[in-house]
Amino acid sequence: MGLHVGDNPLLVAKNREVISDDFGPTQFMNQVHGNTVAVIEEAVDPAPTSDALVTGIPGIALAVQIADCIPLLLASSTSVAAVHVGRKGLTNGVTESAIDVMRAMGAGEITALIGPSICGRCYEVSSDIFAEVIALHPAAESKSRMGALALDLPAGLREILRNNSISFTEEGGCTLEDSRLFSYRREGVTGRQIGVITL
Image 1 (spheres, rainbow, N blue to C red):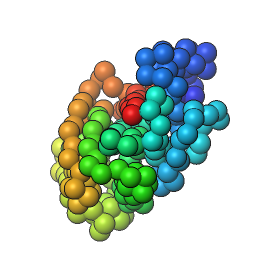
Image 2 (image 1 turned 45 degrees about the vertical axis):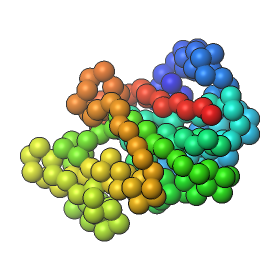
Image 3 (image 1 turned 30 degrees about the horizontal axis):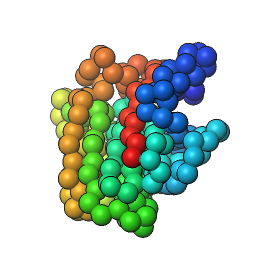
Image 4 (image 1 turned 60 degrees about the vertical axis):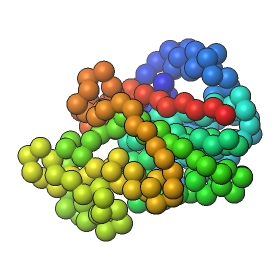
């Protein structure tokens, strides 16, 4: 699914065509670990540089690519969002930014789906990174299997959603532990899975 990971562009285009055939015109994004939210009125190419997509137009599908970060899908009766939540996304507020845009567009009740990502037992980090994230999101504090400092990004995201009165479900497991899933930390150069949502 990714055009930036060394995969054959013709195969990527074919795979993306399958998604569009199933879900409608599908908007991807150029993800940069920022907090920009792009509001989509039609599927465009080149993809916007952002880490969250929001649309209020039925029939347009939004896609987020991941290989250890969290694919977050948000839904309401008036709009939907696809959000790329990694460590930087957790600290720079990309989730909150997407929620704010949806609410500005008239969203009332919002529900969320948290897709597979690296788990808190596997995401070992340096002491500096650990301190930076935990200062903002104490719920993300974790220890690796070996007892080293680690981050539980899904736990941090769950706390953000609770604080915004958003109910959520979780699907999938740990990308590093599950060999059926792509994991950048496990493989280095690797493919991407995607989360897709449409209104």
